[in-house]
Image (cartoon, rainbow, N blue to C red; front, side, top):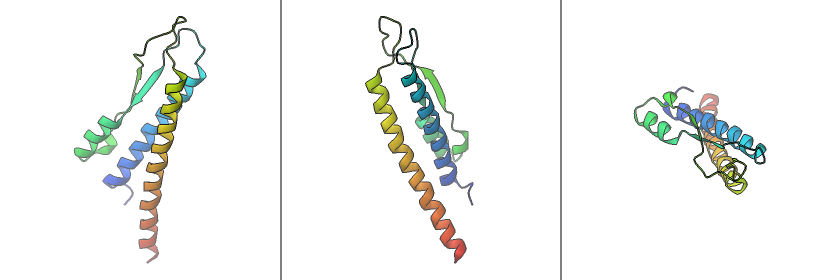
Length: 113
């Protein structure tokens, strides 16, 4: 019951969002580190493809180096952008968590009869 396509899709989304939050926090922590190249996490396209193929568990979370321009010290972290990414990720996480909570609530209601 918890391995249905919807549950697995939501769990895959939570995994991708958690990785994005970790990477964004690391980017922010290195905002003053000379030569640091910000990282990005993407998984949405892979999740959509995996979902359409009926196998959301095969979602691939990719972490890549940002191609944003670097400053004088070789660091390319833009604090404003990182804060926006963090806020967007937090909101997405809340939506997915809410969907999981609602789904498990329905299952609980059915089981309680």
